[in-house]
Amino acid sequence: MHFAWKLPENTDKSLKPRLRRITYELAPIEPATGTSADHHSRALRTPPTAQRPDGAHLPALGQGASIDTTSTITRQHAWNDAPPT
Image (cartoon, rainbow, N blue to C red):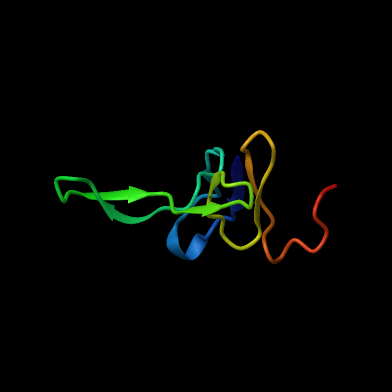
């Protein structure tokens, strides 16, 4: 995803008109992680899990997040007052 904008000429600072751009890479949402340690006491980041009523374990999800039947995590942000259907 690219965000781009023009900066006008600034004659006081001898600056020509410019173009600025920020680029973000969109990737799948990963489960939240917490601090843990392996059997050698080395620090790890591991996803906390929640247990479903049927006994299966799912990653613990943050506020506004949900998981579908294909284990894809989606998130609705607080400012999104009209989520897509």
